[in-house]
Amino acid sequence: PRTFRIAPSILSADFARLGEEVRNVIDAGADWIHFDVMDNHYVPNLTFGPMVCQALRKHSVKADGTKVPIDVHLMVQPVDALATAFAKSGADIVTFHPDASTHVDRTLQLIKAEGIQAGLVFNPAAPIDVLEWVIDKVDVVLLMSVNPGFGGQSFIDSTLRKAEKVRKLIDAHHRETGRDIRLEIDGGVKVDNIRRIADAGADTFVAGSAIFGQPSYKDVIDAMRAELAR
Ligand code: DX5
Ligand code: ZN
Image 1 (cartoon, helix red, strand yellow):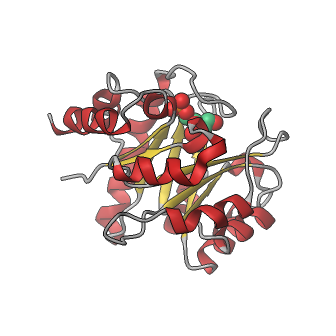
Image 2 (cartoon, protein in one colour):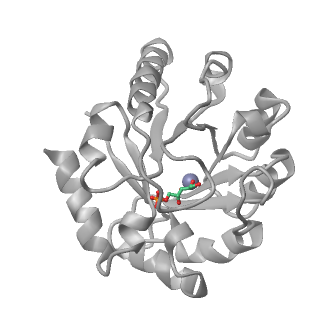
Image 3 (cartoon, rainbow, N blue to C red):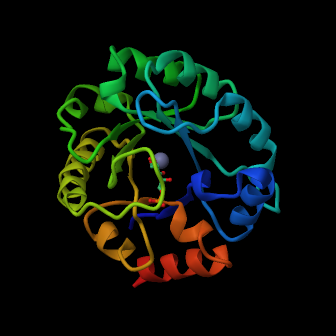
């Protein structure tokens, strides 16, 4: 059976209290912390860099001391220098958009050489063919279900068909090699659509506004898990 992960995006958190927000959402049951890096070039918005990641890493732990992985989603161009900088600043997973990297295989190798997990991100209209050639170096496939740049947008339904396709590739790769690859969905994920998204093959769910827009993060995460359990 698939193990589900919920990855709150701190893009929708209160930036004036980020450390506290990370701790609160972990206390509420977050499995990963999703960290959206935007550069005002690849996407029309600007967020935070490696120094903020470095500052948050000590907050990204559960009450019992277990580390909660920091999932860095790079929406930047060029990719390589920042991918390495984030790896050295406490990122546990770094994902990037293949169309933002000139040499996708090299970027994956750079990230893996840092001893962390690497992943590719596909925009709603982006083809996924590149996966065929680099799947052995990929730990996470992240499918965007909104156009990147902003929280609070609505889920694009064609992502479900794309997820079904990627699930088949991941399962075939698992049968051949025994390697596990996570299938993560990002954008417009809510309590009322998470079950449908899981049915399409996803196992990891980014949610920003759905969680941080509510007074009780725990109520939302519990409700998401209840949907996933049914
Ligand atoms: C968008 C980001 C998402 C975003 C999701 O570019 O990659 O992670 O924060 O936010 P919601 O869940 O509000 O769509
Ligand atoms: Zn993201």
